[in-house]
Amino acid sequence: MRDGLKNLYSVLKGGDTLLRFVLLTGVSKFSQVSLFSDLNNLQDITLRSTYSSLCGYTQVELEQNFADYLPGVNLEQMRRWYNGYNWLGESVYNPFDVLLFLQEKRYRSHWFATATPTFLLKLLKAGQYYLPELEHFEVHEASLGSSLPLNKGRYRTQ
Image 1: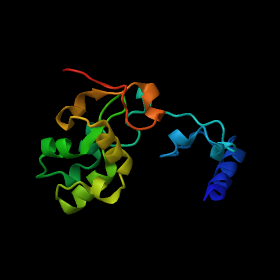
Image 2: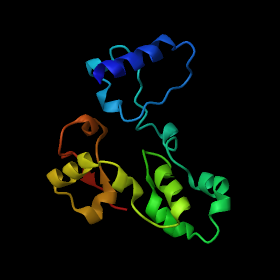
Image 3: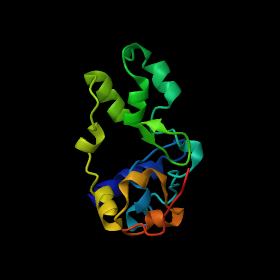
């Protein structure tokens, strides 16, 4: 698997004069390991507000681009279910959940059911976080690459 990924990154690096922007997801925390020696110019944009809406639908995008699918949909309920991505910027809708909801017209935790959020579950269990206050929990940026639990966070008040 590692060799296959290294081959992919070598091709990307070899074509860097032809590439303007390449988005790799799920790799930011691995950027310091030898797997990326062939692609050593990665920039982690996870916590840059400029890119906060890159991987989801904004409210305006949802209402404009999916207008034909929204008659009869309670937009406030849809927002509560699927507009939760936020990386120091505008909150965005989870694209996977939105597309499945628009197809089925049924509110479900599509992402949770199809992904393997074991990291998140282990984090919550190890840190013994008070779940009703989790929305107000802040973690220092330096803690994001550390091991479980995130013990340098604090709760903020509204």
